Image 1 (cartoon, rainbow over the protein chains, first blue to last red):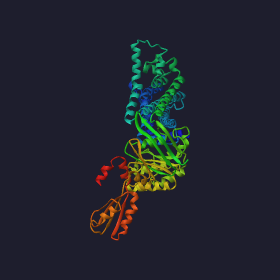
Image 2: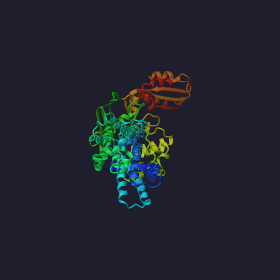
Image 3: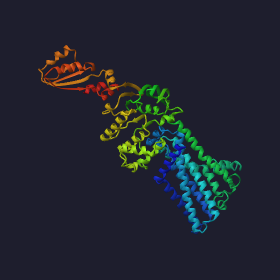
Image 4: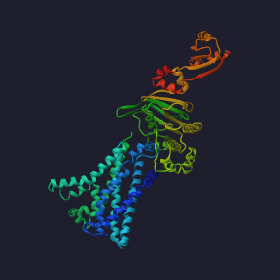
Length: 276
Length: 309
């Protein structure tokens, strides 16, 4: 454990030092505040909109931004150290490959968690103070769930970034692969799913459909944040699915947790086989 | 057990390409071994196998009495230090922070960490970011890292590449100090001049095979490379020709003032006695085959070099 924590600590410090933490925190806070304030601009008003609308639009934006940031943060985690020569060196130290990988992942996971909690938390506080609802339970419940799921979404894509990094022999290839991963999960998957639905004319039945959505962590994140919001029906037209399995939030959170462990486990397997 | 490293019949294949072929090498405790070879000869592969970073395809590897890729390699890893070839450290961290990271992994306390920074001459720059360091400073940081935990075995891969002469001198001073304390050191290099006096034995790798191993004297004997003896003095022209042939010595009198002899090592004293007994001899100069000459000989280009000389 000492080894894992040492590596994690160094990785987090690196994140602080090269301004990743600061950049992500500021970005998140600005997004949240901006959407809360200008979210109703389309309907001709400026000013803080309803909590539902804020969370729903924030979630829609976060689905694009968080995976991208997480992938950018960690795609070169292994291949970058390999190119620097420090990977060889670390492998000669008294720590296992598993400890190295886990420690690095924990460091990056901390960067995502810290930035999300601080950035979105500050935004929530500001919204609360400016609307005079800082002590409203609904506000903190909604933001609390949003932040929790945002952190988990970040971890999922950090985990995927490790898999990308373990599979790549060069930094530039890792970058390309990371972009493809982002593209697949954030854009292509939903289109493909929609295509299947249309092509089969609804042949995919309603009990099976939720499980298909769980194959994409970005969709799981979406469901967590849209479930139970009336605004979601207006914005997404996915009302039909915000029931049954898809509104079972504890289950969805477990799915995200699984999603943040599985690619890392695969990365660990690949990493162990490489260099030998 | 007196051997720190024992490699027996070690081979390594990468996807069918042989990087090392049937390598046998024993390194006794306290020895400084120069591991020489061209690029791609297998130097780094050998080091990686010794460190258990990669596993051999065949053969037996024993380091400090254990298998480096075995279950108990953790204790082993505490006892060695490694300086990889052209390593660049975390640019955003300070020298002290970088060394702190490695010190924690090796469970070395802060006191020893700072003492090492002092020792390699980085104390003043310790709190500057590594990205402001020169190549020499980075290499010194790398050396400090390798010395964490007072290792019994030190593996240095091309440690002097890209260093200025002062830095090279400092590096060898540190090396000699460690050597006098009995640290076993493997020094991999393709830069030859100047390392002779810092190593005990040489191992020369060529295309994944060990083509020679031994002390410099052993290699000179093995290759039969002659000594060059030059003398200056005042003699009658041609006076020495007959004296050389009487004694079975291969010598040439260049002119009335210069003599050149190529002598096998075992004839060295006989030739010198002959020259010193002559009161007309003013000066003697002996040159042994250098490490570079020996190296080139084993690389199979010796003929060309001798013709050039």
